Length: 192
Image (cartoon, rainbow, N blue to C red; front, top):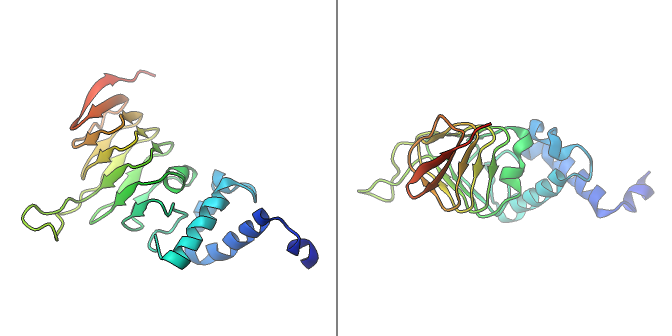
């Protein structure tokens, strides 16, 4: 048994490494989603990279799931479905800031690279301080385009598409629409 394990390819070692370290770093529900169904699933690669970055570079220490070291997370106050781990673990350049409030991401939502989602702005009179935080709600099956920013208190209904480079300053709770621009405005409805 030990001889077989020593001759095992790197992918098996990665699986074992993640399983051992997951006891200390991850909520078990995130290792039971579709991204971890087989020992060679993509989720194990994301978790492997994340664990090394936690140990060596001390990045994302407060985030309790396999998170891309190429993204910046405020802390663990991001609520999402475990099957949607791909939006948080595989993209790059995103900024998720959760000062004083949570970010809720609906099931089936895709978040592109370089997206910023923030719950609190800086105070105008003192940039060293933040205003009160307001939760951000993103509905199910939304698509947040490249380089978009979603500001505090925004609520996006199900099936909302945010065009690339948009700055979302107000809510679109009805969903089923495409919003674009700075500030974002609705340009069309999406009919099922």
